[in-house]
Image 1: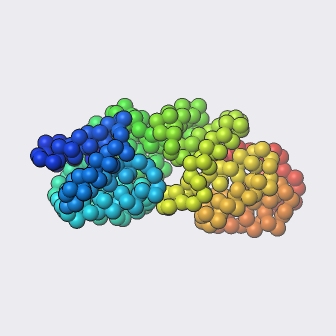
Image 2: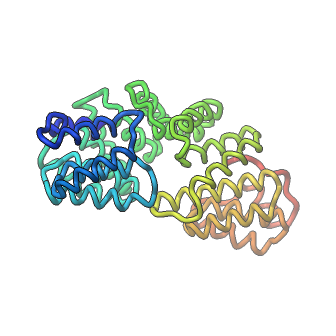
Image 3: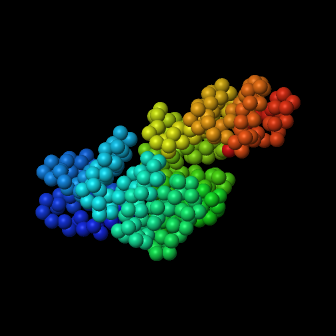
Length: 360
């Protein structure tokens, strides 16, 4: 929101004349921590009833729909922002927020198009470069993303958003410790946002720093309890600590937040990760059939996810369903997630195995 708000002010919205005073008031409210979004939407609809060709009103209505956070309003938000751009192609803030929205929807190529158009009007603008870095990362180009984030940071070394995207690119490049430093720096520079704490917590968890991860992930949840993403690694952290009841409660919360169907690739990944974590928790509780059901669901959601095959093979091994276990183990190995040596030996010899280990 901060980048868009700054661009809105740069576009002169706050000092607009005539009827636009109402838009100025709505803009200030939308970017405040205590926004009255429903009232803002009512105001904006009234402005558009009087002036249907107000690009700024369409833009703000798109922002208001996005701020509501309801999945069924995302299409409305895109439509309003697109209409604002059609009415005024020079309205850079509309392109920036539309790019944010496309990234939320898992459509980085569309976000990239909007940012390229914005950069033709504001070349080398660091906020646009930073957001373009995230587009490149989501397009599977972390090296290009890192270069763009660093370019933005040369212009503004204290820009928390660019530092966060730098951390994301570093994490994708398997430079985990550097990513942790970047996320911590982003927080120090004012980026106290749920996604930053969530990314930091996930990286700390991968580094085996479980207690620190729980602190960071808990802060992410406090900042925005409606986001399922930080709850999943928090459930994993509790499981690794042996706090299985807390892990179970966290997963129930995630299930209540994501529903049963996803609207985007990102939503589908959350559902896959939820099913996978449920499978590992049930395995840890030696509830083998529920574990198998959850892991099969993860595979249905993502047939290329090797870890799900690996743990499903272990579940079948523990159920002494050796042929099934062998089949899943072979699939897991092809996808780069082989069974550990002790489980491979137990499968070959068809011998019982010890208690489940929390190694994921």
